Image 1 (cartoon, rainbow, N blue to C red):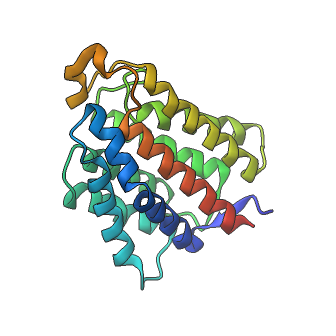
Image 2: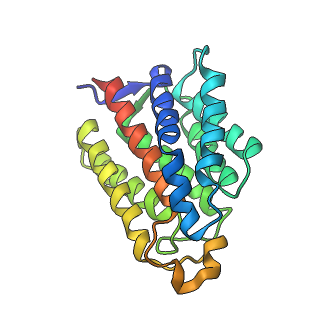
Length: 214
């Protein structure tokens, strides 16, 4: 098992992310509909599907694809999540654009740069029932595993578990941002849609990278 993956071989990882969102379109709509306006699955599916179609016949690297995906989400889909995910992916792409081989440390850094970019445009923090509750622990898991020289595949499994735990933690939180924040205590008991889609994306990304590594 390799401990790096080629940036140029990342198209299959990107397509795995597209497929995961498409497969969960209805589920994300259901989650969002409980305390939001119910369009999260539809909007995410629209953006990821457009992206999948545009890269279908392209020879594109992982970071080039993240940049294109982020641009599509930021400019072509509705809702508040377009600019949020657009910022994350574009900043991740910029952090890794010069890499030929992406190590565990590189991937952790890319996620951290994406998270930092997001936190410059939103005030949300861990505990506010947003996708940050998924993205932050996943990023920390990768970075801590990289620091101790963990094997790439094992670190990705740990990242998936951290993302899942973070997503699930939002069920017991009260929403502080977005439409659902108007519900106050009534927003408790339901997963956050953004945290859920973030977990789906990170899991698909991790699984896709494992396939490239193997």
